Image (cartoon, rainbow, N blue to C red; front, side, top):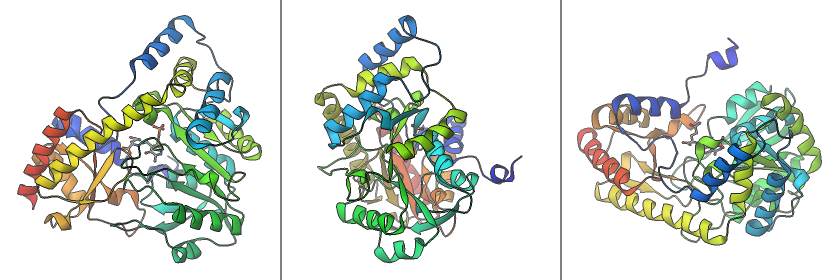
Length: 384
Ligand code: PMP
Ligand code: GLN
């Protein structure tokens, strides 16, 4: 086996969901909702399977979806994308792979921010890139000018940034984005901005696309995912948005990764992106209610919460909650002994991890949240 992969553990999401299935635990680990998908989008997909085109669609995506992505971002984020700047991929995961493999030349330095979504580092290494990590730490996971100055250098070609940030739920402010944009412009680096959580932002916070900062329109690859927007994580329909020179590089890699994505799902996503504002508002409000239920229950059970403004996730500080275990031990014992699965945030670091933070997914029905809370209360009593 390729040693780059042989030495990698199975992803923490698969590990925890596997244990959860095996032990019949409540799964608050892997981020997938158990409610919230729009029925009309499902009907559209079913109709497209039955009556539409089921052969290879064009490589860069159905024209109607590329157009719908551009129109959607003009409507919600005032972006000025052309459909030709959109490439449809099989989920954001493939978008990341195509962008990284298409843009990294062996030996290039690639800056990333830890905690980092688990796909970034293996893909950087597969492309021959040299990862330079900026470590973010709780409680505020703040990016500093000093940390950026240490990570960036003359060999920096690419930055991978995730906003809102999985696993912490941080929604980065304009000031924080400006630090990254300045560093990219000064070092002539391209930014891959993973914005899959863009619609899952709460309490009046605003998600600002990195592409809108001065000097960034031509040097940013924006990544999105229908899985998050429509609560359909298994569909794996995603996209990249980037200036033509970057899109051309992404297309070269995409053609030999998946080449294309199921046309029926593309048709349904194109329809869904055009839904009226009421859908997007209600979707966010539904998840905000689950989030409040989860955070209230965690507080009542004696857990200390860290701030989280976006994504499907909230996290707890184990030490602050009176639990003297590291996050990995806590998660393994919680799933086996208390019947609840969670994600240890240390898995999102390649070295020197933060080990006292555990991520919980609240995108669940009231019944699931309540059952999960019951088990987490038990876990705290047993393990605290
Ligand atoms: N990036 C981030 C930050 C994510 O959280 C996820 C999935 N939760 C992905 C990429 C992958 O998205 P997809 O399922 O569309 O491949
Ligand atoms: N992105 C999802 C999460 O953060 C999991 C995706 C996966 O399982 N690969 O939970």
